[in-house]
Amino acid sequence: MFICSSLFLLISFVLATSYFLFQRHFLVSVPTVSDVIGIARQVDEQEVADLLSHSKEQILRANTSPNRFKAAQRARARILFEQLRGMTFNALVILLWADHERDKLKRPGMSKDDTKTQAIADISDAGPSVRIVCLAALSRLVWWIVLDAAGLRRLRNFAKLQSFAGADGLAEYRRLVNAAASLSSSYGADAAMHLRAVLQGGRSNA
Image (cartoon, rainbow, N blue to C red; front, side, top):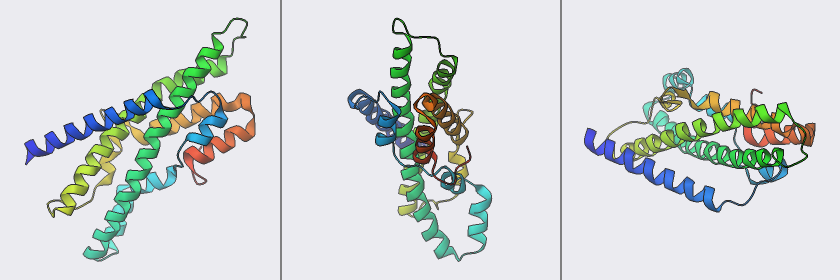
């Protein structure tokens, strides 16, 4: 069982990584914050935090029957899967945008912009972390869903998906969004507000 689980997770991770590398190669250019807003997928950061909360899961389990808890967990797993996919994709879009902004700063005659430089550095640091944690989480979640469907493992302890290799995916995503909002400051306050609305949702913690 352990060997099968390890092989499945390895294959899932390789396939997921290949898919997102393919996305990066063929994704259209994202030269402005408007392009990011138009391409990025809607993520509700607070919903993700709730789904990953061990205490909220325990409360749900204590206040529902086993059958209803099982059904609720399956629904929550589907939502979490889509949210994690969105976070992974958004990290890629923001990284591509940051690359474009970095190239603009290197053009002859461009004045030095410490705010943009720092934001790009933060994006370059947080973006890959978000993608690694989310790809690992997606692989594990898919495996859990398969085991649940086969009656071999119940869906629970989603909180275990929040971290991977010492990195907290949710915290890194917040750092990424904050850096992206800072980078968008030159486009105006409305741009930063709309960007946060797409990347975090209306109930997010800035």
